[in-house]
Length: 384
Image 1 (cartoon, rainbow, N blue to C red):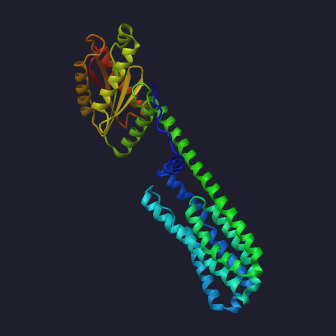
Image 2 (image 1 turned 120 degrees about the vertical axis):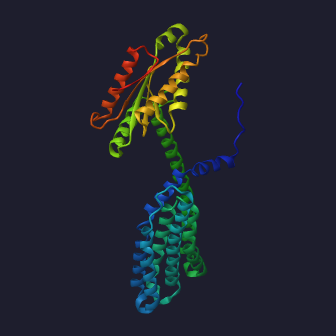
Image 3 (image 1 turned 30 degrees about the horizontal axis):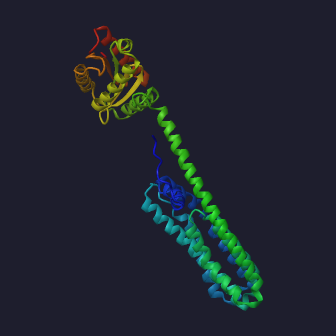
């Protein structure tokens, strides 16, 4: 009987995407997108100001404030891409960077608010009012759509210049029609922001799920399905990496190939279910005694296993494998009435002069395994 879980409330459903976005990958995506979307925005504010200043004659009417505004826009524009986001996925540093980046965006928006209010309130800049209003609409639209990654920051950035401008329009009876249009457009922007924000975060959640599935498939493609050890593909990669590292650092490297003796007898006498249990138990013991920081364990196929010993001499590798062999002979297989399994092992040490590739080292260890088999099995044989 399967018991159903508690029904999720609407509030829990709404929180679920945001909770998933707490992962480092999602936050990194938000940081990256914010950086890419922010880099050129400051230039357009500067251009907008220059259009307003020229058409309204700001430099002639009030040269000092006009020059200060020009300098401020020039200073803020490069700050957007001067400080790159942190490379390491540290949540504290990433959130700090986001606050800094949006501080620049909001500061630039506030500066534009000063320009727009100046154009609307100073009769000397009456000729600049149309471009000031058009630019205000353009910047509000850009902020809402560009920064939908964080709707709180986007809304605040728009509010710092759009709300005062809207108040001025409503206060002037001659501008009531324009004020109404600006109000309707603001409602549209808010709705668009909510939709864009939801779409963006759904995309992040979907991309996170796809990455998770990709990583899961990648892990499955490198893992033996029965024992949970690395499979032959991952073993080949690990061995090649270990050989390259040993050649570069001159640290010792040993390779052991282990093969269960007469394993066909287990399957024939007790069935494949017992045989699979035997392989699983063997793999677990192998990982416990020879894996971890000591060696890299893998199932090569059938009843054959491999261990890559990085930084381990062949003498030590032989000793480790001999202990493992001895411990295995003391165990009987569950469900077999006391049947015991033994293992034959061949070990070779990496020699850059003789092993040009990882395959050369593997073949030498395999020859040592063949020697252990021909000498009576249940023994550890080292390559000469």
